[in-house]
Length: 109
Image (cartoon, rainbow, N blue to C red; front, side, top):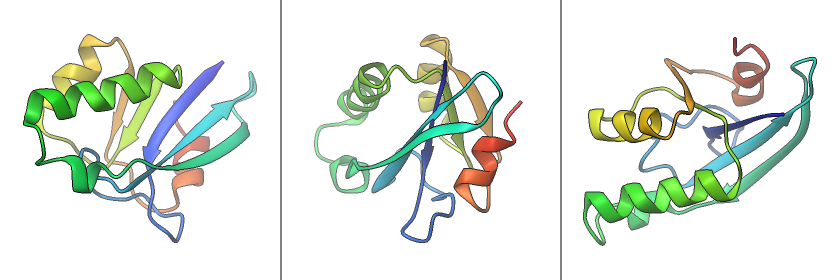
């Protein structure tokens, strides 16, 4: 099962900030690439970002991704350190995401 994490805003659009996203959605996909389950989490990464340093913030995000068994991350952009972390976790990274978050997830390759 493919599990995609994507930052979202209150209108269901892709939130442009990954590491400082207030909310993210977790989409569980079926074998046909359709969204089976869509859940939004108020992660508060915007408020938490500057509290403990970059390493702890990256660890917080990594723990969330592992806890939710994420296989793919879609985002508009992210910093090089975060990109390295995502890649070191062997997750599929899809950058350049914009527009309706559900539509982005449904069209991932």
